[in-house]
Image 1 (cartoon, helix red, strand yellow):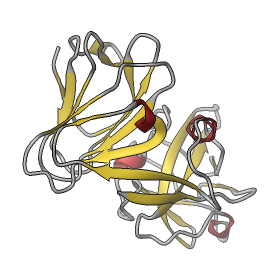
Image 2: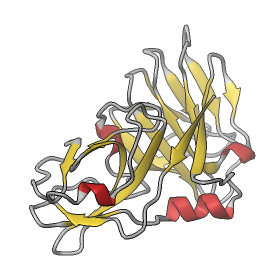
Image 3: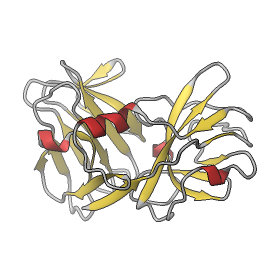
Image 4: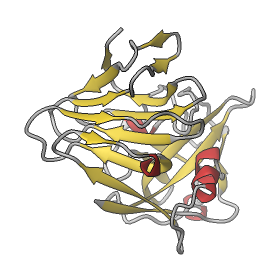
Length: 236
């Protein structure tokens, strides 16, 4: 289990010095001299912060920043300081492209506030944990606080994570860290949905590609994929 610090800074706002030309771009350059407005990070993945990029037409995307070098921000996932496109389109947002002079700002997001509401431990910074499992595991309601992440580090074969009976507001994240199938399975009679696609009852989604990420939130009816990185297979 690892603990990662969610960093904050007051009035951290800038504009893009270089365009974000693809939805998988992982290097974000802010206006010269304004990188210092954003939190300093260790660069080893142990801390991170969220930013919101805003187009002139109001389109927004939330991204996860795991490293900063002067005015250059690196997009990635907590637990690794390396660039990873799975850090795009966080907290239910959609990946987009952005132009020079579009706004980038460190903002409080719904996911952050839900973590406060649900009692995630808070000290000088907001923290969440990643838990490695090498055998099948039943995810608990307590794990679904929005800042719990499960990985399959060290697994010698497929690991099946069975979700708890859904309750609106539950949220949990999974990241493939070993090249074995990480399978996320719905509870009896429940389904996992992404856009217009849904699994069979008690169905699953799975991936064995290292770096792929899956984040789910429960509604009153289904588990909904709100953040996905890479290709995940599912049963219909």
